[in-house]
Amino acid sequence: MPKQHPSSLHNRALDLLAEGRSVKDVAAELHLSRTTVYRWRHAYAHMTAHQFGSRRTPSELSAARARIAELESELRAHRRLAELLNDVVPPKGGSRPSR
Image (cartoon, rainbow, N blue to C red; front, side, top):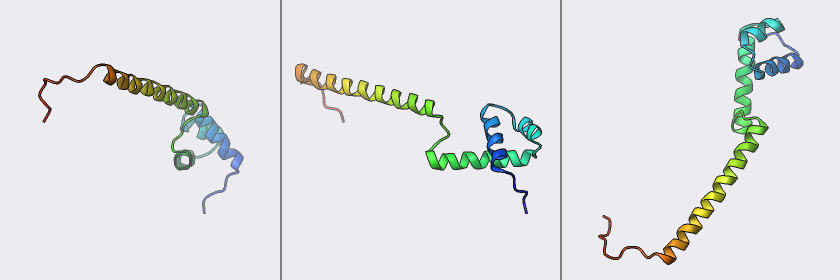
């Protein structure tokens, strides 16, 4: 049966990995096997991907939402401009219809 580690150790390992530390360094510092740290990292990535859709930080998500809002606003402006141009400039009447 696998050895049970306290959740505080598990959380500490994940925090160190999130800081950019290597699996090798984290395993050495916390006196764990590399396999254990790899498994914990993989399980966390799998859990968060299914739970939140991706491993994004709150700041990345808020920046993405702001960018989406900006692009949607720009798209509305372009659509409105296209409507206005259709009212003012009629399409060419003498051109051949497309196939």
